[in-house]
Length: 273
Picture 1 (cartoon, rainbow, N blue to C red):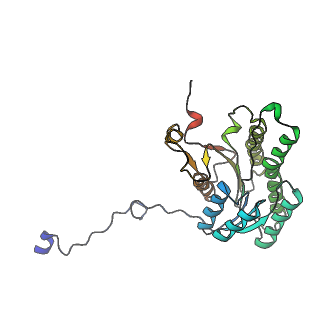
Picture 2: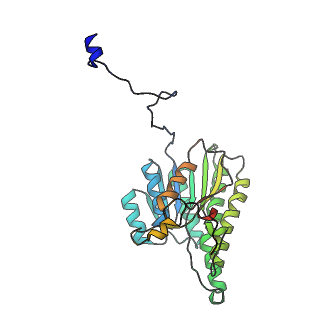
Picture 3: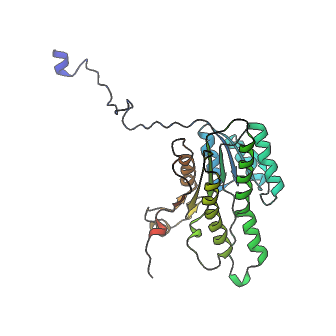
C-alpha cells in the first residue's frame, strides 16, 4: 500500500482507442500492388515511384530520359523501361512485357507530361500536336491496354486503379498556354469517360490536378512564393505521391471519376489587382 501511495511499483498501460490500437496510431491495409508509372524518372513521377516502392509494391516505370531513369531505378529498386510514349507500339510493348512478367497491373499512373509555353502567334500546329501526343494520347493507350488485358484474364481481378496526372491549368490559364491547357483539360475529361468504361470491373479512374509543385530544390523560392499560397508554402512532389497512395488504398473505391486539386488553395483564392 505504501509503495502504491508513493507511486512505486505501479505500471501504467497506454490508453487505447476503441479498436484496441495505441492513441496516435492509424493502421492501413495496403497489400503489395503491381504498379506502372509513365514518366517516372524525375520530378513528380520519381516521387510516385519511390512512394510505392517504400510501400512494398512492385513498380515499373517508363521514361524517355535514360540517364535519370537509370538513376531512379537504382535508387528505388523499380524496373525501368526506356520508352518514348509518343511511340505507341513501344508503349504497348512495354505494358505487354509487364503483363507477361507480373500477370497484371493493379495500379496504372499516367504521369508523363511536358509543357511548352509560347505566344499564340509563335505556336505551331506541330507544337500543339506534340503536346497532345505526349500529354493525352498515352492515357488512352495505357488504359486501353489495361482494359484489353483484364478482359483476357481467366479470373477476374476485382481491384484496379487508374490515376491520371492533370493540372490546375485544365480549369485556369495564362496567355500562351493553349496547347498545355487543352491537353490537361483532355486528361480530366478522359478520366470521367474512362471511369464509365471501367464501371463494374473494380477499376476506379481518378485524376489529380497539381498546382505549383516545385520538383527541384526549394531554396531558390522567395518568401512571397510561399506566402501567396493559403497553405503557406509551394507544393512538393511528395504531396502528389501521397495522394496516389491514398487513392490506391483498397477501401477508397467509392472515389471514382473525380479530379482532385492539390494546389495549396490557390484556385480557390480570390485575387484582384
